[in-house]
Figure 1 (cartoon, rainbow, N blue to C red):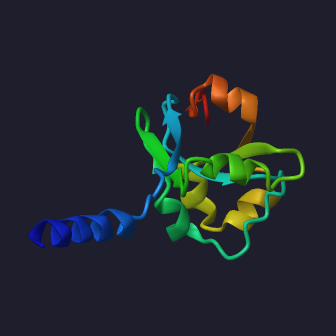
Figure 2 (figure 1 turned 45 degrees about the vertical axis):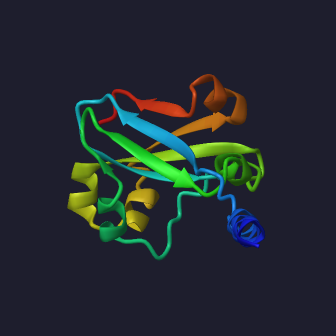
Length: 137
């Protein structure tokens, strides 16, 4: 009887476990000499309504630092890429000094005070989902 109870308890334990796949990760490595802020998008529209400086301060990447961005599920970043019209990921790179000067992302967008870098799924796979930012001013 004890053996049956143990088997039932173990069965319940193992059947109740839920598999939660690991998140997919994108790394952005700042190899420039300047601090920057990163926005990831699946289109090239620079408007970022609703986000102000505190939002970007969470994504500041100091020189030599790496920003790790996670999307849920093992295919998280693939899912994000497929939401865009061209299946590309665009990185908008804003200089820290510009953020401090204008304190308004919409103003920076109007003035084109950012760099934009685009990646296809194949390019990101070839880079092992590790993107390097170089020579940003």
